Structure formats: structure tokens, C-alpha cells
Image 1 (spheres, rainbow over the protein chains, first blue to last red):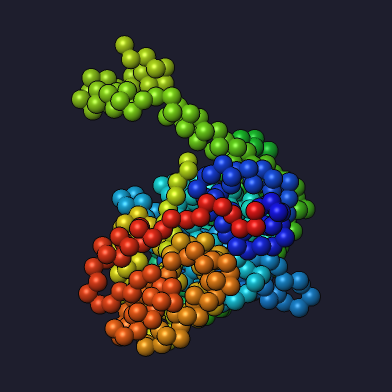
Image 2: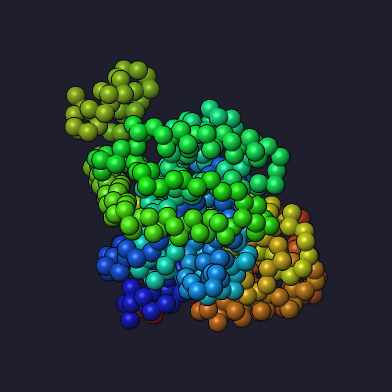
Length: 334
Length: 139
């Protein structure tokens, strides 16, 4: 039986092994991805981001549990979790600790949790996270949580990958100026203030509410006719970002977040936003593949000695970085 | 692009609540370039086997201080085999009486590390033990 077929039929070990192949970028993994691609495009991809320690994993634990045990009248969903933690730039190793917070999901065959190391990629996800998500999608998982590294303000890649992005804040992490800086807050479809039992939560809430109300009133902020090549553009027209308070460790306030996710999904379908985001997602996947492949090809085309020689000339300031670029890309060593 | 990392699950089965040793080992393995999934305290053998499968690890490290190793370790090994993950190397750390060490090794554990073990020793043993089968299951 082909690997793709056994994954479609629910073989969990085959799935786990393919995820490793895909993560390692092997030829076999890629071949299997090709075979699986026609079966993708059904899952609801939910990104969860926010600073380290804000409670992302614990919140995912609660939300995933609710998708498995939904309110009456709703079917339970097959849930996958992809949790990314940072790779050490020094040793290349990583501690993947998100699973530690997801104990409530153990023993449930309808849940599959996979930890990933970022492996040098910036932006909060690993290079292959999008591929891993495709595999889960093709394997029939209906809801896929993608939890980012949690490095902070620049972590916006998730908005290109997910249909619904949840930004998790916690009290006492900054004033209004932090909140109006460009970056992470702009990508929120749902904003969660976790650890809402801590003091100062009112201040955090007030600061965040003022920012979001302001955005809603400002007609120039997001334009619905933005060209799709604007990489992370969030059309907020027709969707007011809900600001919700939770205490994930006590499982408090989770139901409203779950409802907001369902409402956002409905909004995506009704407003054509789903298609637009799929477009952005696949375009950024393609662009990233092109970048990486061109880089690899170029690296193969040039010898290490040549590269070192140019680098040495750069360090000794005989040539400028732009000269070095010209020499290396045009292969002109004169 | 093709990049292989040794993936290790560090888990504490059973009821003792002391995980300093497990964390020290986890960190040492990280510093040796491995990807270490740390799954925390009070795990059942079932939870450990499930995590080993989902994470597709090469190695499972069990830290046990409670004295229940002769019950917990065979159960973990049995569940790994039931999941067709017999290739996963299992090592045990913690407080293990000398007379139990040969029995654990006989069961298929690749190493038993008590207090005072150098982390370099564990790293070396893991690196020597991990050659993965290239073929996929069911293909």
C-alpha cells in the first residue's frame, strides 16, 4: 500500500513517519505531499500566537478539548495540533515543551499532537510547518491548531498560514505604545487576554480595546480592495475583532473563544474571505519554495572556497557587501 | 534541505514528583543538538507510548525515582511494540537498584543511568544507538 493511501486510511504511525520525512525535506516526503495535495483544503487552520509564557499551549489544550467535546448539537471534530518551539542557534537542538500543557488531550484517538523545532527559521514557524499542516489536512483532521514559537512582535508568518489567527496577550506586558506598534496585534482575528485573574487585567483590556475601536473607525487602515500581493493584509471590514478574557489553567472563559472561532469561520465563508486567505496562503507557500530552491541551487553552483574568498575580502573591507553580492551572483571573480 | 535530527522523548512515568534529573538530561541532549520533547510529570505508560508515536521519536528516556520501574518500564516497552515502534531505543534514569539493572537490560532497555552519570555518557550512547530504518511502515 502506498504511504499516502495508508495515511488517508488513518494509519497513525505512517502519518507520524511522513511528518518526519516532510520535516526533513526528503524526496520521499515531497513525493507523498504531491500525492496528498488534492485531498487538502478542507481543514480550518487556527493560528495561535503571542509572547512566550502567555499561555498559548494551555489555551490550545482547552480549545482542542472543546472541539472534541462540543456543546450539544455540534459534532466533535478531528483535531491536530502543530506546536513550534525554538531551535537553539548554538547547538541546533531544541526543547519541545508544548505537549506538557496538553495533557487533557492524551488518550483521545481523535487528537494528534506534533511538536516541531523552528530549525533556524524566523517568523515563529518552521519552514516546513505549512507542509506539515497539509499532511494533517489530507489525513482528515478537520481543525488544525498551529502554535507559534512565541518570540513576539515580528511573528506574523502565522497570519499567512492560518484562516483564523488568535493572538494571546497577558496582563502587564506593555502599555499602549506596545499595543500600537506594527506587528502582532494587527494580525489578530480574535484577541485573548489570558491569565485574566492577574492584577492589572483591566488596564491591559482598556489599552487593547482603545486600539481596536480606533482601527474600526479609521477608514484608511484596512482597505478591502488591497491588492493580494500585500503579504499580510487583514480585511477587518465586516469582522470586529473580539477581545476575550480567559484563565486557561482553570478552563475559564474558553467557551466564548470557541464560539468566536465558529463565528469567524462563518464570516470567512460568507464574505469570500476564505478564498482570499487560501490565495494568500498558497502564494506565500509557493514564494517561499521558490526562494529556498533558488538559494539551494545557487549554493550548489558556487564553491565553498570562492564564497570564503569573497567573504574574507568583505571582512577586510576590500569590497562592499554589494560588490560581494555582484561577484557571487554573477560568478565574476575578477 | 535534508536535515535529520535525533528526536528524544523525556518522560516521567508514575507518581513521583521530582523532575530535576529529567530536566538536566533534557537540557544536555538539547545542547548536543537533539530535539527533545519534554512531556512532564505523572505520565502513564499509555501516554508515553502515544507521545512516542505522534512525535515519531528515535529514543525514549524514562526517569523513575519511585521504585515502580519493574512495572512501568516493561509496560512502556510492550506498548511501543504494540504500536510497531520496536526500533525506538529506551533508556532509564533515576534510582534503580543494582540487581534490577540486568533485568531491565534483558527486557530491551539500552541503558540505565543512575545518579552521578555524566551527561556526556548518555549523549554518546544515544548517538551510537540511533540508526533508523529508512523504510516506511506498510510500504
